[in-house]
Length: 159
Image (cartoon, rainbow, N blue to C red; front, side, top):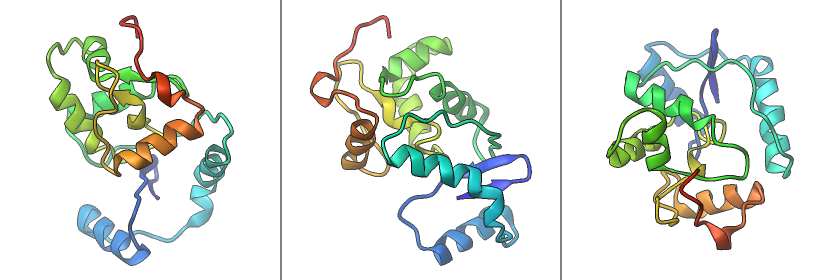
């Protein structure tokens, strides 16, 4: 996890601390400062989330990377309610981007703050899971933590 003075910027999975620091140095051009107290709010929320508690991830977020298109997609992800799913088309409709499902999926795949910006709640229009950068097993596990009924991923077109 890494934050800018303006807000949380990254939540990284599957990396060692040294590889994460190296990546952050490459992205930011400087070695990040180690200040765990500044991230304690986010750590506490994530611990509650992984314990199965319904959590509203509230707090400042600051994107250090991303195109305006990607940032719009990432902000729209926060509109998907806990334990519910929406389609790539739903996001496209919200942003007046008909037919942009593949580009929306690519933006979701570059999400710098997964879980907090819940790209795991985005599925295909036909109800199948679609993809997930961390692997479908993680997407399924996150939906399971939220209590989403895995056996009924199909949803109405109103979502």
